[in-house]
Image 1: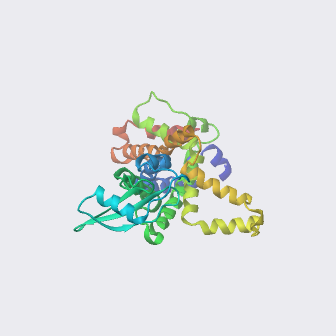
Image 2: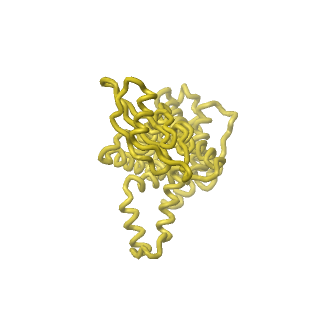
Image 3: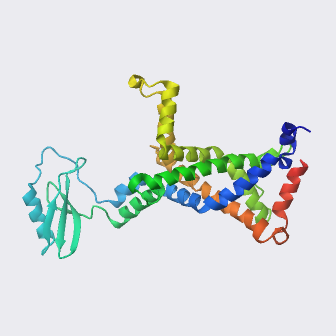
Length: 314
């Protein structure tokens, strides 16, 4: 039987499948917690704009019929709101809303407050605790809390490369041969949990393969955009007069899909749920490894081992 025929009929007997399995196993174990972190924080950030507006002070809108208060008047309003404090700085009016940040100090204690540039009303902390938590989550997801120098973005790019390899090897492992491939698309909910973990991992990987692979590739692009830009220039020419080129549109959609930037809140909610799929994949993969390696097939009831034997016979 030739290599191609073996791959079609008995893929588990091929060296490619065995190598893919080992790569998938060890990359999954090594990057599992990293993938879970990206999965959870990514889902949390789908509604980032809405959450940021909800957590931040309500800002007024520009009104041409009103006059902005002078800097000294705003400073006096801040001193009245915080007696005993010294105004150290009055910022400029922000571009998007008529608000001003004023810095105050009392001894070694310094802080900033947001004031209405029309009325001098104290609007509160420019960065409330929940808003800071949201920003921290974004820094963790985008830069691994290593914002300066782009180090975090670089390591995220390498992590995305490994996740891409995880997707490729997972696809190799999923293939069960022409006689058994359909079983990898379904879940038998009535089997004991060791076998259920196997079914969940296999079926979830099949149905969400494209989305997870898209997140992995777009993660590489966000970390290393230059090679993608050069490829677009090579494929569609460097004449920007025809912008956006088809390649530019593809890259824009990569970013939009990566972050779930939909106008519909329903689609965003769906993206939040789908965003947790990689965490489920790690949990089910870890359960399979635990049953086969840590507990051993005898204690696990041979469920996962039997599934492999059945695949070999197909």
